[in-house]
Length: 177
Image (cartoon, rainbow, N blue to C red):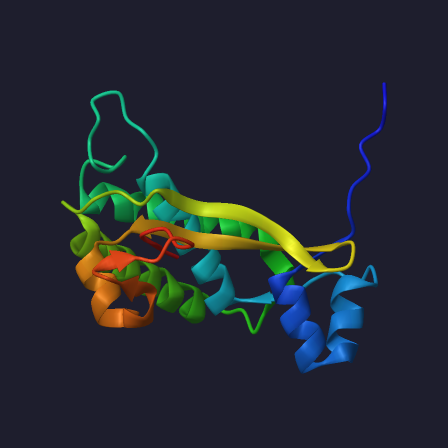
């Protein structure tokens, strides 16, 4: 069986880290020093996981996987507990009060997300990985939070340069990332 040759790649966050501080990039991506993480970032990771789950297909074709905002928030609490358990002693400036503060932040974010998106068209994609050529043989990797369809009026208002003769110019799709 032939082996698949993987192209060298770099993530968007690694590029940003390298631009901001080459030394931080070296210690983060080129050494085996155990990674540490802060509670705001863990909260964000969990919220993104929950939003992805929200659009998981259901047998009865509900708009959201969870039946109520309360069940969504309870699932958030369990998700956040699992994340905290995985990262354990590698959490920077960890203390019980801060954990509860970010648990509340997650509740608020997800309740607002539910309110803003319930009854609206589902995204075309959620938390989807992408890869694109970056430089020579190196690919840039990243994750798109969401890809949503937008109407021509929205594009006309926000990006009028993409409209010609009341139509979207040929090289573009009516989506927003």
